Image (cartoon, rainbow, N blue to C red):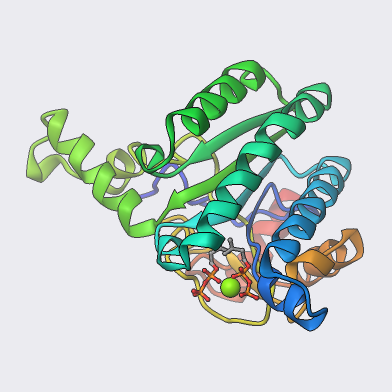
Length: 252
Ligand code: IPE
Ligand code: IPE
Ligand code: MG
C-alpha cells in the first residue's frame, strides 16, 4: 500500500524540500575557546539565523531543527535555565524578522514542560506567522521521537479508531509533523552519528548526513556541502536502481 507521506516514485529535486537538523556541538565549540557552554549556545542561535536565511534563498520549503530534547532536562540546572532564557530572548527578538521574511514559525514537542511565559510566546509567534509561505521553520523543543509516537497513539485511541483500523496513514496523521512531507535530508553536526530520539518515524527514508563541523561553525557553505552530498544519492525507496532509472527516464 502506498502511504500518503512516502513518495511512490523517488523525488529528483535538486534541492531537498524538507531538511531536518540536529544542531549539535555548541558546548564543545565553547570549550575549545575556554568559554562557558552558554557562549556556544548563543553562537548557535546566530548560526541558525544564517541557515534559515540560506534555506530560504535556496528554495527549501521546510526546515526542522532540534533545539532541546526531552532528555536535555538531564543537564545541569544552570545550563537548562540559561537555555530557557536564550529561548525566550530568541522568541522575543527573532519572530519579527521571521515574519518580515514570510517564514512560518512552529514548535513541536511537549510544551507543557515549559513556563507559561514561554508557552504564550510560542503561541503568539505561531499565530502571527501562520499564513507565511516562503519557509516553514519548525523548532523541536522538549521533543522526543518516542514521545511523539506515544502522543499520536493516544490521540488515535481517543478518536475511537478500532485496533484493526490503525494504519500508517492515520497514525502519521496524528504525529507532530503530520502536515509536512517527510524530511529529504537529515543533517547532524558535531560529529556524533546517532539520531538521539529526534524524528524516529519520519526519518525512515531520509538521507542521513553527518559532519564533524560544530553547530556554531555551520554556515551556508557547510549547508551547500550537505545539499551537494544529498544530490549525489540515489533514493530508491525499496526499489532497484534499474527501476529508479526507468521511472526517471519516463518522467523526463
Ligand atoms: C547542542 O549542543 C545544543 C543542545 C543540546 C541544546 P550541545 O550542548 O549538545 O554541545 P556538545 O555536544 O556538548 O558539544
Ligand atoms: C541532541 O543533542 C539534541 C539537540 C541538539 C537539541 P545532544 O547533545 O543532547 O545528544 P546526545 O546526548 O549527545 O545524544
Ligand atoms: Mg551534544
